[in-house]
Image (cartoon, rainbow, N blue to C red):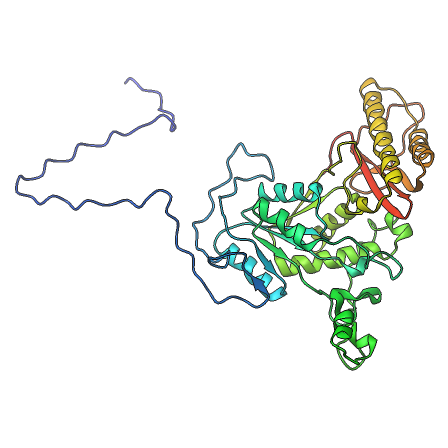
Length: 417
């Protein structure tokens, strides 16, 4: 008996049978009118939550019911998806409960929420993080909050640059859906005695005779001071913590608070603060946050200087000289990767010395320069008479020009997860 090969599923087709002819006296079936292709479900307008401002007319974003997102295309890059087009006026949210309600409404509607944490005074580097978030999610929230827990009492918390109107204009132009801009995130007295949210100044402006410690937010008989902090024990050691031992405890704590308030599916960070980015990834893993933490390579000015909100405080001469940092590390990267390709031995100590010399010769003061493993941040030993280990590494640099501390880095030999 002759057998036929099976027909592949992708090619098999079934021709529909012709319907039997209807009797001549049968009534014609009613015509169905299809809705317009562009029609979307009407949004639902709940009462506005406190601490939530609308930027224009329309429903509070996140309360429209939309169909579940389409599955990710099989050819999409890992971590990327095709976000559904969603447009709404920018909302400024100052209250934690309102922020949490906003995120939950979006997630109930089937949207992915992305958070971009910032301290404001936004530049093109920050905006590149927002664009990366838009590649990965549907509803985008940017937090703007200068975190007192990462500034010691003698540091520049009070003089850190701020530009609320300019920040909102930039985010509105990009199509961001919400800005979370709390006045304060810490109960009681803010860490390190800072005047969080200007509470002390507001009390003085009202002519209050409240004692200073109460005006700052904490008293013995009022609200107990904030006392819970998050530390990532190993990764926070060395580098920035040598000169700022309080810094990473403050960063991990505020990011943990923002995750709990904003409840994002995705959080996007820049890699300029490389140690900070690795610490956040480790915290998310260790504390079981169901959040995809994305790192975006640092953005540079046209002359190569790493973008930073603090660059505005550089004097013209320091600004001109500070570009030597990026020139030195990018040159070392080029030489190292050529040496790996050719199997040529090199001395890491020599390269670190070249970077230090370039900074010192341009009037900078080196805080640290090192070449470390990308995941562990431990120094990588390069054999003297053998090729450079081609494992993912990163050159980390911190230096001061005048009273402005600058960070820079460049990854070597690929990018580790």
